[in-house]
Structure formats: structure tokens, C-alpha cells
Length: 362
Image 1 (cartoon, helix red, strand yellow):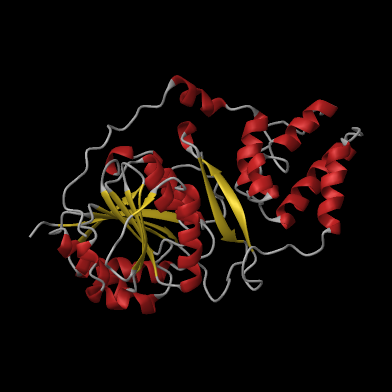
Image 2: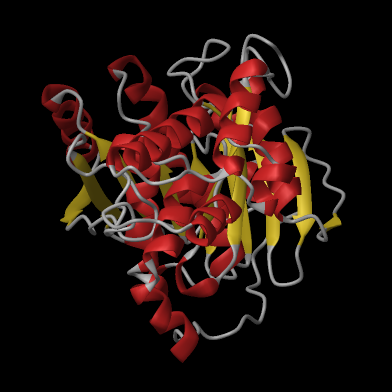
């Protein structure tokens, strides 16, 4: 199956008045958004919410939009995170000598007495959910993730800062992504790809990775966020899931960069845009990654572009990869990094860099 003809898609929508008003959300709404995606408690922007005495009813409202939020009840965020959040609120209210709502202690003590956090799947992984409220009232992305740095031998089971920064960049450059054929490399649990599929009406959105546990979590997350999409048959054995959401075909693919030439990727998609976050950290992967980029650019006759978001952990490693791109006749443009506005990433702790990579037509 090859997506060579662009589907008819809608024009990029301008934010409505209601959506624009969301920029000035109430402190309670701002805290709720940060809680749902498990922003570290020390980094939560409270916007004065805990500076003044919270009444009994105001405490109840805070619980309603955090630990007792319907999404959290159905798809629980980390118990350890909820405990840390409640502990902070209780401590702040105690400092102000404020009578605390019974539900605060009921939730807090109930979580402490439940013992160790129950994983969703394999006990060695310990997955829980995070919920990302999207810009301009475009809905919510719910993702099954791991809170551990390394789970089941991979770092791909959680959304890293570079992925959130890439989402910010995408939200501010809508015309570059609206209605395109998009391929994501090293998708992980799916934040970027699902955001693109939900909000930018790509003709086809293919999310790819090559680790078994990551692909399993990714498929679950895609099905969770596109529960009404129709399944589509695909004869490519590396495509484990293909859905039709109406405007967009959404695929999950096992794509090993070492064997990209044998993947029959070109039968599924000729990308206009490639996206990736946090894939440039191991120089031993660079030859196969470069080979993959060469292969994909050839599919599009060098008419596609590659948007890469990196956490610069080692400047020499990143420079080595950029130099390889230059040697291979790619052109690199470094983009300004958008401030953390919608996706709540810690810009103070990570040096994020974003590049748009292209190549002259041949």
C-alpha cells in the first residue's frame, strides 16, 4: 500500500475565541494540566494558588481536577507522583494553618496504605499513564509510559524533554506539518506522532521504532487515542497496526535502521516530513541512521525535510552527527526553541536544540 496521492484535508484552523482565551487559564486549570502530565512537583507553576488560604470548597475543586480527575480514575498516573503532589499540598496548607479537606487525607493515606505501585503490564516495567492537554482545546493525549530512566532495557518507554520541545515547535509552525505525509523515527511511546495525527490531519502518519516493549506500548497508545478509527489491512509484515481515522492513515512500524532497505517502507509512505526526538545520543548508531535518512530522502527525490529535536548531552557527539550530515550533502538550519507553554518541559534543565534538515533536489 503506497500513499502517493494526497487526501483532501481541511485548511489549518485558526484558534477560536474560546481557544485563545485558554491562554489565560485559571490557576486551578494550569495546575491541573501540569498534574495530568506529571510535571515534577518542584516545577509546578502554582500561579499563586497556594499563596492564599484555600477554602474547603476550593480544596475540593483542586482534588476534582487532579487526583480525582475522571481521566486519572480511569487511566491512573503514577501513585508515587500522586503521593508527592498531595504531600506538598498538605504541607503548604499546614504551614498556613488551614483546615484540610477530609478528601486530602483519604486520598493520601489510601495511596500510602496500598503499598507498592501496581504496574499495568510486566512487573519489571511498571507503566502508568500521563495525560497531555493539547493547545487550543484540541483534546487530550493519554499515554502509557514508564517513569524509570531505563525500563526493560530501553529508554523509549517515556516522553523525553526533546519530544515535548518538538511538540511546542510543531504547534508554532502549523503550516509545515498540516496535511503532510509524515514519518517519525524512534517514536517511543508516541507523544509527537499522536499529536501530529490528532491535530494536523496528515495524509498518513507512520510512527516507527524497533524495540519490542516500545512497539507494544506504542500500539496500545495509538489504539487508546484513536479508539474509533477503523483497522486497515496491510501486507507489510513490519506494519503491526494501520488505522484510518477518517482524514489520516495512522501506522505503527517496526523499522530497524540497519535494515531499512529491506523494509518496503516506500510501499507505505513517501514522506514529506520526517520528525524525530532524542535519537542522536549514541555515535555507534550514526552510520545506520545516516543510511536511513539517505534512503528516505531518495524515496521523496530529496523533496522531504527532517525536523530533529535533540537534548545536547554531549556537544561532541551531536557535532559528530551534524558533520556527517554536512558531508552527505544535507543542509542544516538550527531553529529557535519555543518556550515551554503547552507541554510543560523543564527548559532550565535541558539544552534542547532543534534542526530542520534538507537536501538540494537532484
